[in-house]
Image (cartoon, rainbow over all chains, first blue to last red; front, side, top):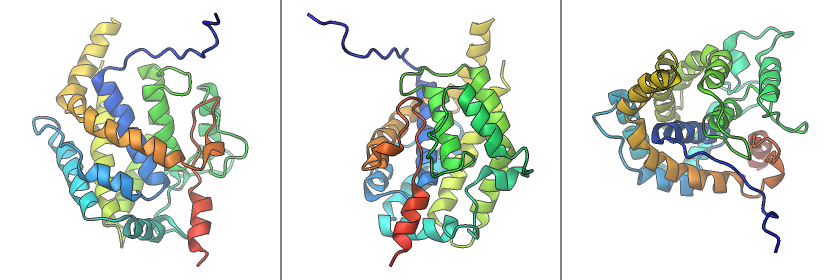
Length: 209
Length: 65
């Protein structure tokens, strides 16, 4: 009998609102990393609405993304993604936090993010093709801090808050405003609205004692 | 102390509808992870769970017409 051969992952059950937060970060991170494929669009188009008695801005933004997802296909989404974020060095909308946070070379956001990620046990691989201040990565790091993953449990709310306020908050306003106003943003205008609504809730919740 | 702190924050998050949103977004997440990682397993850092995107690489691929 070998009862101990299986790796054991200990996960405390997340409260519903905490897994919802992790899910929002996962979804937004995914949408910033790459255009949605047909499977994701299909899932989103058939997703349940957020209860109307909740945050009206979040509920509206969610519904609009759900509706937009049913009118979108992967080819069109990819075309929009490339038009907005593609073109290395001359993208219409930068996906890098450093662009919005005012980056000094010595203390560039990605340098600080790398250090903080390492401190939280989330150092990316050395051969990562992506600088650390890519929003896809920052949202995904928040997903792991909120929901845990790959053997680590969720970070404390204080740790989440510190990462959020250090790396996401200084850049997110400029990024989401730029994205919402960009020529050619159609589907991603809805993504920006959902992100803004969700992150406003995050910002406020971190202030609560 | 800690419970009181969590309670206010929790109340706020639940009132915002995040508890109810869980099911919908989770469904999305479940598929997203499978989809997103398809064929790019080496980009997943198993030690940390920090997922590395390959969108630049994909970008180059898609621009090669």
